[in-house]
Length: 112
Length: 112
Image 1 (cartoon, rainbow over the protein chains, first blue to last red):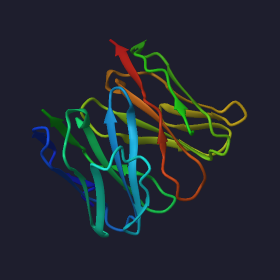
Image 2: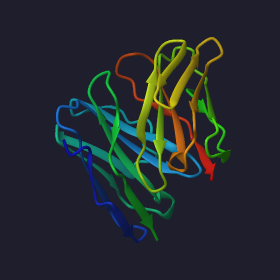
Image 3: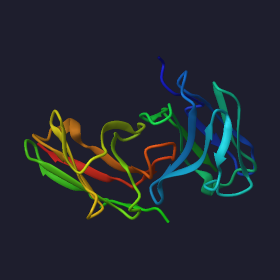
């Protein structure tokens, strides 16, 4: 298996622009997680899905953030409009129920 | 508020020595405990997990859990330069489907 796939790996954008991050979970995994990592706050859970349904989005910082999972093999995290404080590494992770959680390589976002 | 606390470090140990990494957690209902290693610029990768009080050994790594004290640790024997990384402690509330809560990590430096 190729593991969790994320794209793009790096994104540089200007404040106010829309940013879309993409994730393909490991095949067969029924849970998908979006995390954000910064030096100050560490690894924060933003939202997670089970069988494509959002279960808990309480970690989404603002209405500017939204996430979707239209099918079992694809999820997006969108920031609109982006702000400099959104600069971070965004990780997607997936797992089967009760099993080990695997992380993707991350998307490094810089908002200027 | 579920919290996982780690000393941010850096923890510096000589090559060949034992590195001891510590983690405390706030929620007494926590059932599963995980140690992830994260190299600079990379994503977290699972080293080992522990569910029961006591020690669990895997090669040079030993996880120790004390639920009464709400304390979990990771020992790395015969530390190598390749062990230099940030070690993240993660806790899951129950054995089911809740997401992992991560500490901010401890940065380990191995001195040759």
